[in-house]
Image (cartoon, rainbow, N blue to C red; front, side, top):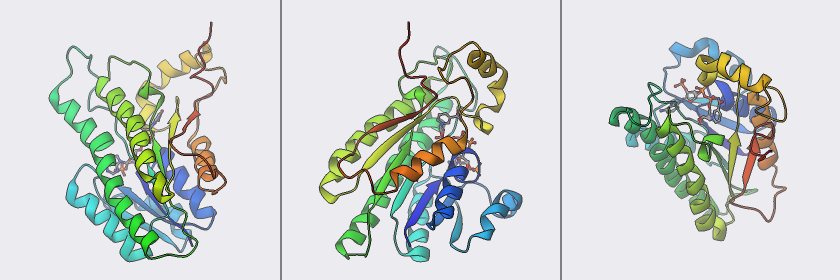
Length: 255
Ligand SMILES: NC(=O)c1ccc[n+]([C@@H]2O[C@H](COP(=O)([O-])OP(=O)(O)OC[C@H]3O[C@@H](n4cnc5c(N)ncnc54)[C@H](OP(=O)(O)O)[C@@H]3O)[C@@H](O)[C@H]2O)c1
């Protein structure tokens, strides 16, 4: 069975991705910052799957990143699919002229630095599986960025910068890993209905109603999970470094 590691799978987009892959017979490990006891209810739906593993860890910390990868390898023996989904908004939305180093470091250490070095560690495990000729092994890396990778929101600059960084990170790993047959893809979700956007729901409700997206609705975590399913299907045989928009057409420049 193929093995997927999904960071931030306890809620929102990551949760839908993890459940989708479990339903497709993957063994799945998810990562979240809270203890199992704190999220007993959230994990309930996962428990009906035999090959599920919850790892408590913060991808912003080096020791945790090492432990996360070690735990997946010890438990499942390999990592076929890495979905870099965990991400945070700034502690406070502050204007670019006022934001703090604390805000900046918090977002960057998780969204960009954490994701970068977790990927580096996971890739080394993938290369070992390739060297060991593990059977039916088709590794793939999927990075969840955002429309914020190219859309300016001056009231959360660190978030936008972190997501622009994920876009370049995708290209860099795609370039470097092509020789090993490891494709790397970027998914750019648009306005998605999750806890992350709960505080700005009214604002986005209005924007959607007024036509900010050609497809006039909120995106759902399942919209992203459906694309992840496709990207893990091994059907994209001559592609890497591609960007996939899941944004209701938000990226189309319109007049
Ligand atoms: N919602 C949107 O509109 C939207 C749009 C574009 C892109 N995105 C991106 O999509 C991804 C998922 O967003 P979401 O809306 O599903 O977010 P969410 O509902 O806030 O969930 C975030 C997930 O990440 C985990 N997490 C947070 N910090 C972590 C850390 N330091 N280490 C490990 N796990 C951590 C959380 O787990 P615990 O809480 O259990 O720790 C949770 O499972 C993010 O990268 C986000 O930037 C979201």
